[in-house]
Length: 140
Length: 140
DNA sequence: ACCTTATAGAAAATCATTTTCTGTAATGGA
DNA sequence: TCCATTACAGAAAATGATTTTCTATAAGGT
Ligand SMILES: [Zn+2]
Ligand SMILES: [Zn+2]
Ligand SMILES: [Zn+2]
Ligand SMILES: [Zn+2]
Image 1 (tube, helix red, strand yellow):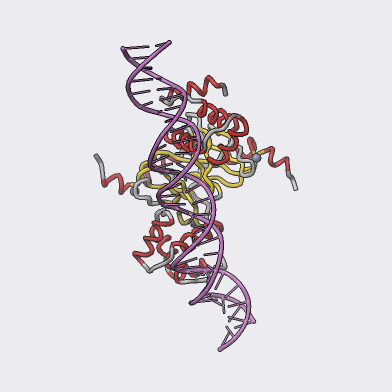
Image 2 (tube, chains in turn green, orange, cyan, brown):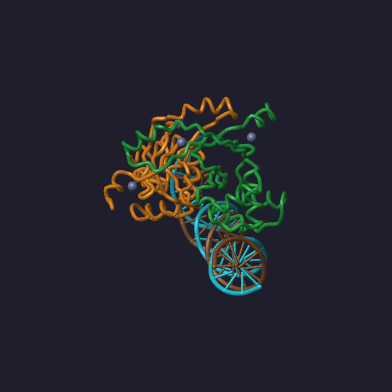
């Protein structure tokens, strides 16, 4: 993703454009995987520049509020994925934490649920396993 | 659920049968809703007897390990639901935290995902909204 | 260029969760 | 039933992730 797109993304949401947010967002989006706040912090530091851990926490919180990031609980840890704006689901590799977005939604069941037990506001559908490259890597 | 069932549940998993575990499990299962560890602790205290918070944490951890409980991340808090052993999904009321189990699974998509991006080990499908009684309660 | 206000970051505080330790009680076998 | 073994409960302390506070800075609008 281009720096310009990042800047537009920030503008769209009325966030100020700072080099720290640019750095974190660039890393986050390009990586195509999920991170814990600390992992993302390290990742940004290595690749771009020094950014405070507090800033990473704050950006993840902000992104989550506007629906641009989603927290996942995996094995007791909270991981964040970057979310494009269309409705989508995920395939998460439990080994390398790569995340693939799945734009096909097979949860029409929502309509039934809606009638039976209450009003569905949103749903989550995610698949967990091992991605192709992790499988090939180690086939014992 | 009967005390006898709780005891059998514990036996099945080779856990010792203690009054503390009986109390927590009775409360947890009968409530039919999700709890944070602290909430469950309070709930048990009110209804049954004093049980240490540490014990609640440990039981939830243990149950999660053997698949009898599932942690959910909602609005930054970790909630646990009790899980029967069949494959199922959830409808969670965001207001009262009631949980309904849904035994219908519309995620046959898993097979496709499996072929396209990797090997699916498990999936999660959950619906969030407001339950009937919460809806009727306040219709502004 | 100036003003207003959001943001970054360091340090301190908070708070949920885990660990440690010790006394107790559940289990299984004699 | 009694004993030995070991899991468990609970209090207290430790840990460590996350949040809050505070101040300096820089972004955006006029
Ligand atoms: Zn992988
Ligand atoms: Zn969907
Ligand atoms: Zn409700
Ligand atoms: Zn399913």
